[in-house]
Image (tube, rainbow, N blue to C red; front, side, top):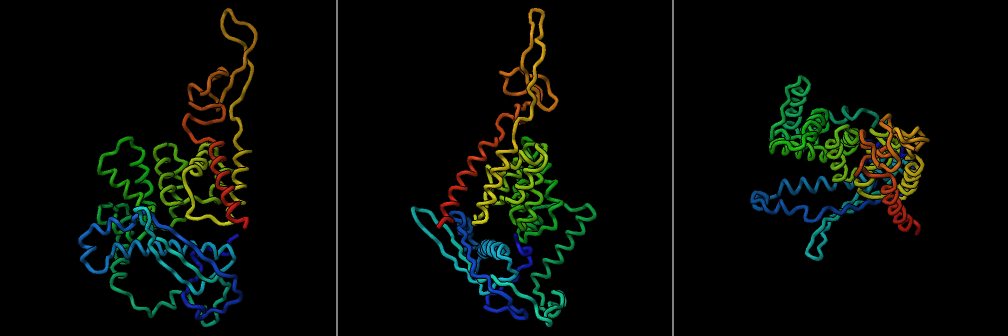
Length: 369
């Protein structure tokens, strides 16, 4: 179990923490991240990036990758019951082969448990009082405050410029405006081009904000009663590698339609950025939940045969209060569900247990030594 929230973990590039007493060294942690192929290829096509000196787009992409690998380190440190990381080192490398390029980031640090000294017990606000505020940060905060005020009084309209501001700065404060907008657009079978562009911006926004905030909303949307909205939410979880085994575990104990079935869809499509040894037991537990938790939801019973020339009884099945169906019929004529409560084409438990089985076998080989 994690010691504390990963957001609370202090990170330092130095071997010591000024103002803290290290109580225990918990060992080194490392993390590796391989970015998608040609992640910077679009940047190279821009004259402003080529000739404008240091590329803002390039630096933004690189910063985002570094933040993600540090987040992975924090999670590993938290699992070791640490509250700080010291001696952080980040190495960036570009790998080429067979006409493709990948960008690899390796981060390492030492996980420690530390307590602040008496002189460092002031609040972070008190400690930062005398810190100079750069103009760029001032402009960002002023604009964010203006948009938050508009959001609060219901007058916030997201044009292209505002979308860019929210996405570039990854501002989770606006998620309550973006979520209903994305659901409204996604439910349409063929939204106009302008609305599709907004839907793409909604996607980029969810991928830019902290993953825990994005998951809070996307996992709920995955159980939406409109299948287009649910599918869109799962596609973002898939693209952002936002599989959360703890959330899946809880969903499997929830409502069949709003949580259990969406959890199967997420498990079949989404992944984690990386897997650890602790994930092995959690995957086994989830597989066991699926194997034991998805039995027949319909009822099989005997009824009197209908018709003037018929006599005796016959077996029929019924699901969720629907009509009685003959045993040879696979799906209910009214609800479209089979006896297990699934529609045609929906992800089924046996498909997911097979996927989980493959991952479990890989992790066993990886961590068996």
